[in-house]
Image 1 (cartoon, rainbow, N blue to C red):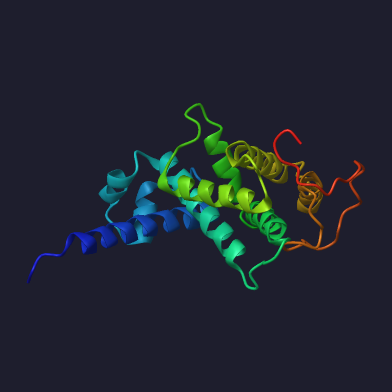
Image 2: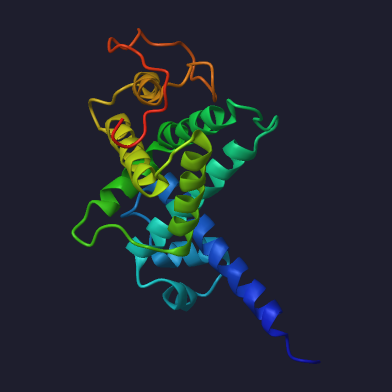
Length: 219
């Protein structure tokens, strides 16, 4: 039997890593962070416990990569959903879909996303990883499609605004409604409520005067 080629080995490593990432979001979403061990994750993924250490320094890094992968896949599916937006308003529709995808994750996977937000607010902070870079690139491309003249400035601002909306949605004991936070973001970017995937009943109108021009950096 001939040895496997480098490309086959690389594909096997990629699949093993992805199984670990998927098992992580599934288990942490079901049980919480503290109740999920690396052994549990390896068992769910059908992998050896030592394989996790090959890819990740520890559980915190594994969780961040796993959630960033989930966010990337969710955002990608939303942006590519048929019918694909075309014409002059395509960028607005894509930005609306992006906002709805991230807020929707916070709504649908509250325990997982609350754990993730707590994780990145630790002293060790935000971790750069391939999954985070793919998510960042997709959000940056969305900002470009929206019409940003300076995506390197406007992408971090969009990321900060989305994170600032996710946190109050997940606040134990005093969560803010997704629809209200969505309305604020849509107001900020001059997006019509009907774009994207509106979440049920529309909240009372935001009191600030609306400006339909793109609200980019410095705007």
